[in-house]
Length: 172
Image (cartoon, rainbow, N blue to C red; front, side, top):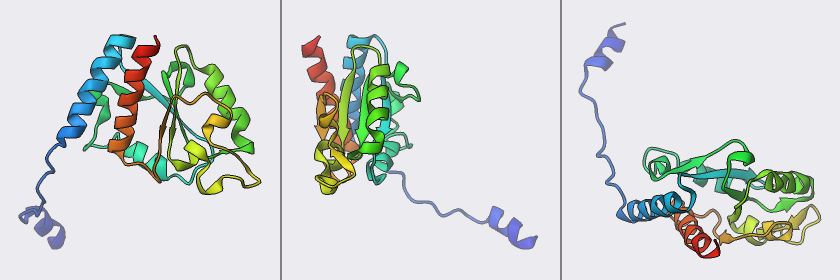
């Protein structure tokens, strides 16, 4: 019992908080501004794992941590494709996931955008040409933006989303 109290009363050792990255702040503010102008609200993203090794998913999850906190820029991850503006696909599309990927895409309202995140989703990556894989997301869906990397860093993902928002404004 004494050890527990002594731990509570000891001076805490903490590191310095990291300073916000100005590049992330700039990209996030621009995404928010474009999303509000085009959609009148935030940008809703549905992430779909089509057969990945979870590396890209970890980086997408990092976008929601306290350092990046993309919700302050109006980017939200949604559970239903019916609520999504953007479908982010990770991993090479396997034969087993082909129907699920098509159904998810078909369930999205218009306008709908598809982003391939990671080398596997862009072109099949190291699984390209194997018996269980169809290839990248572009084999079955119209992909608007590809964000290569194995996995791409959160800053690269945000930069890709910004490029998507810029091109989406020109299409509409």
